[in-house]
Length: 287
Image 1: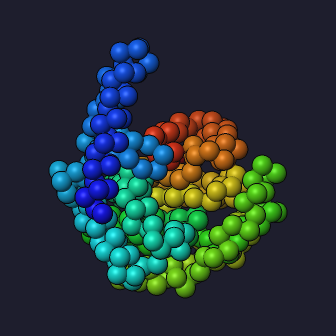
Image 2: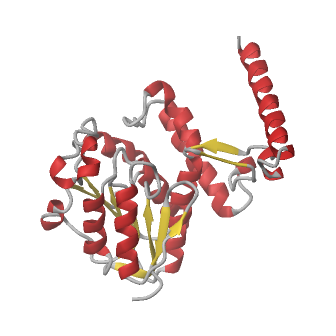
């Protein structure tokens, strides 16, 4: 059966190449469209070498590859449970998320190296199962810098009162999330410097243990109003040299969030780096 499937895949690949060549002849595509595909996942495909190819060619990419392999092993052994994915698809999902996770790892590494605080403070808004912060923490541990992590999430369903009219179809989503599962997942990193702030944004900020200084922020809230509240509450706390990584910035369905973030950044006279993954980065270069 595996041999049959492999032959079918090869045939499909040949047809794709022939189709792209025909498009080029007809003037409908450039030669770059027939390049070998090195990565295919998360709504994008690239024909250039990935940073992690062959285990990585730099110290950063090698360490990312090691982190990625560790996570996948723990997931395969069912020691880490990623409730956002179907169990039978979880490893395939992680393969498709490698560019996303490399950018998370790279951004955390950058923020640590370019901020002046002795203890590097990270905050994530929308922690879910702890998947994203797993990579950020691993980057901090690899650089052997003192750090502390603040995680914010309702670990409950999304509520209509915090959503725009265009987002209300998301109400009730993420009801399956569990704070205990997130804690269990992150226990595998043997990190004590973790603070869990459970609640809805912005209400949670009034009673949470909030950081006074930040090197790195990750915002993955899938909604406009909480995203802007997180920016307004913590922009002044973000160090010069630090950054904000947005997750679903350019994904279909989050157009309102992108528009609100771009307006907010314009008011701050900041530029947003829009990435092919749909993520975006905002670097804080001055006070």
